[in-house]
Image (cartoon, rainbow over all chains, first blue to last red; front, side, top):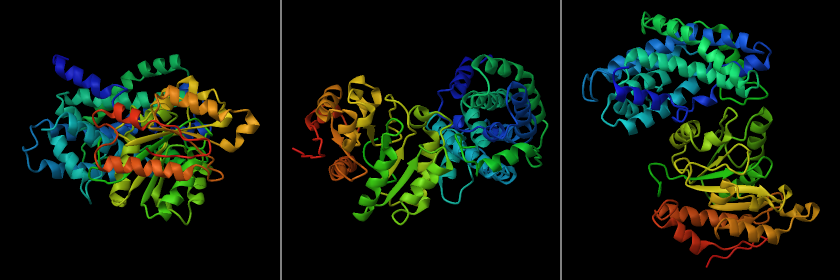
Length: 238
Length: 240
């Protein structure tokens, strides 16, 4: 990346030390492990591919890209319609995320990211949207919207932001698998590297998707997330 | 953060090893606070099984509306959830603040872990660390960061001391020594001993916080040194 500042900003936002809360989410993996669907790296690889290509590429990443476009157009005072368009994107995700834990996890991560980003980049659109989200009866504040705005605010280009979000989703899932005792740390690194082409494919797909016509389809993950609500043991929030 | 912001709830973190009595402490304190007219909410990270979740709500049934008790899973990272990335706990506190704007106390119970667990000062205004005598009377001198840095060290299950050979005087002396004279308290939550003194401590801490002279006011270390004194094994407590 030509822009050093944008690279450093990207590294900061994607660092494991950045407070996103995302480490508490297993995206349905905890149930898939508990019920015997995922016992090792091969099945985990399939889960990652589904998360990236059938969920992220078809819902969260198109929304992230659209939010990024709005956030990159200027300061908080530019484009008075931007808030309404962000809220519409936000409510779309609320509607199409079928499992409660997925919706709730995404909202909580997104809302905290908005707070952190507003502190870091006070003059940007993300700050105005953070205030709107905090008000009563407000848009839900889903993670993809917050990510698009936050990355735009610190100067990270759109495609890079989407790749970073895809990488974070992959890393979080692999880390959850380690914590659930299904893979070792070396296997985790191999899986992460092997996922790179899938992450790229997911972003390629997301760039062609219309945020007004999103069609994610990951029924097994949705069922796993729903069953997680009533599981006897819940180590993760989703 | 000094003093209340938009939400007047005094956020109290409760950390400590597995089984030390964190949940028992909350279950003992909350009814007493509510009986005294306080508005209370509870966030608990010490919650993995459905049994855990139902236990707390059942124990506080009739005292606290179950919607005031929220569990937050930490994805096997009890330290991160209250220290370097307390996002989910903060998100839940935000939700509770919106639903219960008049709350006086918000307890945040960490997942059971080891002696190094500390709370981010952006998550809580005051931190308690709970150990129990059955863990051994040498625990204070292990100098765990969580045990040292907490605003109040609580040594629970004093009733078991004779059965496990724990010398409470040793724990009191060494606890004060490793904590530089910062306060500690003995409790037996099961039988209610030491709780009145602990409530006095919390009320005093909350008053100081409301007045803006609490946790991170300038010269805090000096203020703590002046406050440092032992609480007797019987829970006796006197402020100067």
